[in-house]
Length: 317
Image 1 (tube, rainbow, N blue to C red):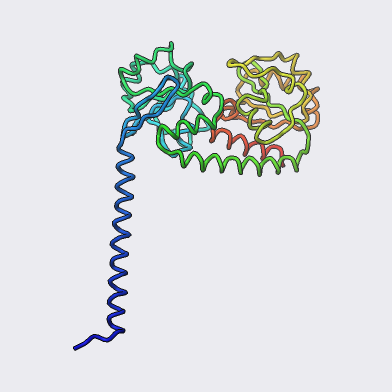
Image 2 (image 1 turned 90 degrees about the horizontal axis):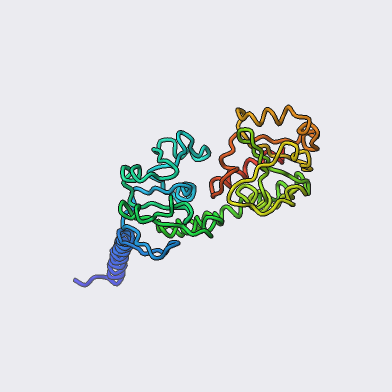
C-alpha cells in the first residue's frame, strides 16, 4: 500500500523537528562543556609585576580593600579585612558572616586562611614590599597603582582575574546611568549651590578634596559645584591632611555633608563652637549628617552607589 503525499510530508516534518531538537541539545551540551572547560582552565593575567598564572578553581579569595569589587562581580571573598574588630560597615550586609583577617595580612593568618588567591590592591599595599613570602603560601596578584587610583580600572582588573569581564562591563554601564539620573535630579533641586564634605573622626577634621573617594562622586560623577575653599585645596595626597577648627570658619559652602559617627568627640566640639554656628550652611539649615562614614571615605562600585543614594536623599528633599 502506498502512503499518501500528505502522510509523507508529515513524517518528513516530524523527522526534521527531531533532528533540530537533537542538534540543539548537542549544541547546548557543547556550550556547557566549553564553559566548564574554560572555568577549569588556568589563565595567565598580568599584574603590577608581570604574568601571574591564575588557578583553575578559585574557591577561596582573600582581597583586602578589593572586597567591593569582588562583591560587585558576584564573588564573596573568603575573608574580609579588619583593623581589630573594625570592618567596612557599608559592606556588612554582604560580609556579616565572613571571617576577618587583619588588614596588614600577617603571614601566619594567610597560612591559616589557605586561600587559592591573594589580591593586593596596589604594590604599596604589599606589607614591607615582600611579595616572595606570600608566594610560598598562595598565588599573590598585585593590582597596579593606576588601578588603585581609579575604582573603574580596579573593577575591570579584578574582573579579568576572576573571569567576569562581561559583568564588569554591565555594572559600569549601570553605574553611569544611575549617576546621570542622580546628577539631573540634584541639579533640578539645588542648581549651582555649592556642597562641602566634612569628615570628623576622633578630634580631627578633614575636608574631602574633589579628587578623593566620595569627592570624585559628588564633584565628578554628580557634577555638584565645590565651594571656593574646597576648590582651592591641593590635589589629594596618599595621607589625609587635617584642618583646624579655626580654618573651618572659611568654609563658604551652601550645603555641608557632615560625615562622622555620633560618638566622635570632635563632632561635639565642632557643633558647640561659634565657628560652626557662624557658617552659612549651618545658619541656613543645610547640614546633612551621614552617620556611617565608611562609604564616604573609600571608593568602589557599591560604596559609590551608596554615596549617590545618600547625596540624592539629602539634597533633593
